[in-house]
Length: 245
Image (cartoon, rainbow, N blue to C red; front, top):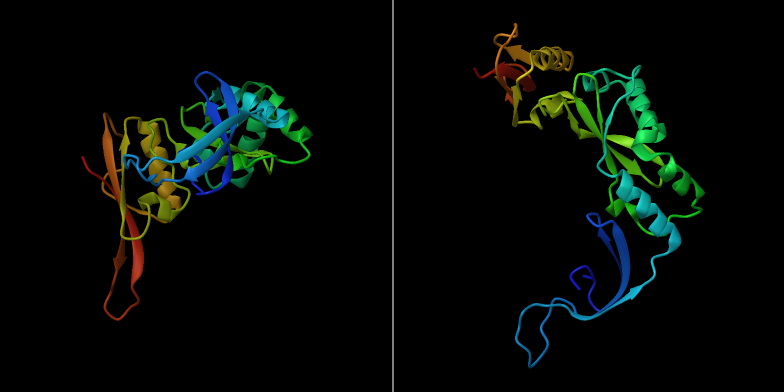
């Protein structure tokens, strides 16, 4: 009842159980969506009926494969970028990552690609169900890739491309801080990650303040974006990063 929120309508509702690996389809009739029926105790419940019907074969086959693929962690093959720092802002490396996710046997065993390629139409809106895998580079940085069943390709989530310590690897100067008049904190336990980060944000036009030499232990970094106003000149945005310890 909660899934059918369009009022007095008939709705197709698909219920996916990823834990036990099954899918069901219901035709739902909502008689009083989110309302209360006279002479009954008011509780805000949606009243109506839900009738289970067969899941169409193409949909069932798609989700059967999707449940198998979703959430896999896959090591990248030799010859691919050794770090996600090499992927960010590099269209050719980004493309290679997507192609690897599409063709690797570990990622989908070629089943998902074959099933989707055979469909003449997409019977339901698959955008509501993300199929995601995680690709890990040799330096233990990683990226989450999500499958687009309409375009039939994998694409990398920029907001979930991270170094070995879980820090976001920004692709633009704005992403270093999360936006104007904002800040973002990073914590590095790996000296190689810290060195790559300093080089990377410098290439994006960020000013790094403080020591950027060899580090040991955990190093905290705070990056801020501020508007600087100089008398007689136009105001401009400046992004700075500095260590906190």
